[in-house]
Length: 169
Image (cartoon, rainbow, N blue to C red; front, side, top):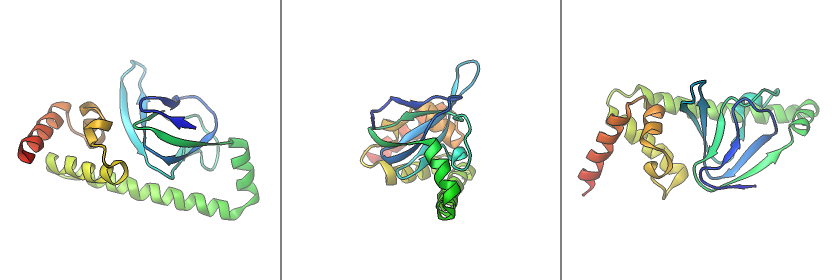
């Protein structure tokens, strides 16, 4: 299945299959009761999602939206869980996937705990470039989303991006 930028793969609270992101990027946003959204995760190639349903089914935690054209393989949940019961090696494979995601989250924590806001932004740009080049951070995420992802206000992100742009010229 091909999903184009801005298209929704699944919505928060729904239940359904699992997905393997073959290429592209997805963002996971949580929608609050008042309709506001917050960016909680970015899914990169070769991840199987939702992470919290790799061992047992659970409703989708957030809404998955394509950040760029993405190729996605739909995985039958029933078949996925049957295969887990038959194959202990499959469980090890899932454990390794979750371990890799935890390591990625550790990188995010490093980004968030960086004292200097400019350094938070720089680390996010480097990390995202490794998955999305030649697309830039601002082609994929709004300034609000960037701020949510690295714990800064949109105004701070705007100021930092302007400072980067003027220093590049």
